[in-house]
Length: 197
Image (cartoon, rainbow, N blue to C red; front, side):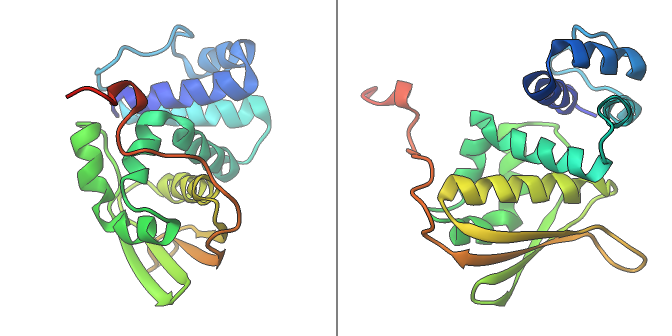
């Protein structure tokens, strides 16, 4: 597992639960509270230990924790920009999800992102199928899709459906109102790069 995944878990826990809680989770998971070395790869068991310890210390459900982690990832500008390049509005963004893994590898090399398959049930009713070996990605994806609907100012119902026997995990997205609010501002060129010729 790439260090960036573990660092994201650490950042999420520190931001919303504080350094003291993070230190206790790190202790229970058997990792240093100082965190993870950038660009190193860690055994997937490290991420699993972090998630289990976080659920234990916080007394929360695993699926809900990971959904909140997905929403947190969208707050990271590098991830948000990667996703916002998918479209000018939320529906365009949804149509771009088939390509998100390839775009992600250009921005975040060696990070194991799941393959997403997008389908449309009706004009405003969509299904995002989440591939890969890790069922946790359905929860993370649901959190990201919910946060992105807020980012675009779109009112949507996000319904995660974990994988089951003979069924791939997926997230159903029903768009209720495309222009529900103003959403967050976004420019293709980052502010510090404007004016550079």
